[in-house]
Image (cartoon, rainbow, N blue to C red; front, side):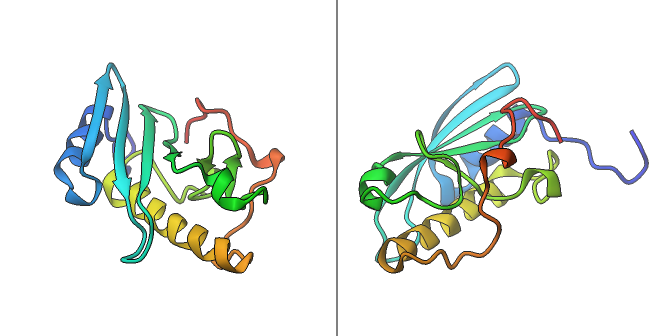
Length: 150
């Protein structure tokens, strides 16, 4: 390991952090180098509740999905911005090739709050039809393979 480089967190370490953080109180499964975590997120005091699923494989980028409610139904047939895929909706929380998220970062302190922020902008987009969350909308060319590493 190079001097100054942080070691990646294991799936077990990520699992313990998720379980201990009240903002993502939920339940999950930990199996040899991978975890799946489900929790409820509410992006604002007047926002709806969303059932969120976080999938993490050690050495790969985390993936975040909204299982309920059905975002496509809420969108009324409009193409939802900032998704890597429409079905099931896989949230675009950061650009993978820019290293905004790295394997030494805690999921509960990055991906979980980024998900709440994405949901906040999603609810605003539902009303205005204008994505105000900034960033770049991923195209098919911006897709990454789930096993891609940093």
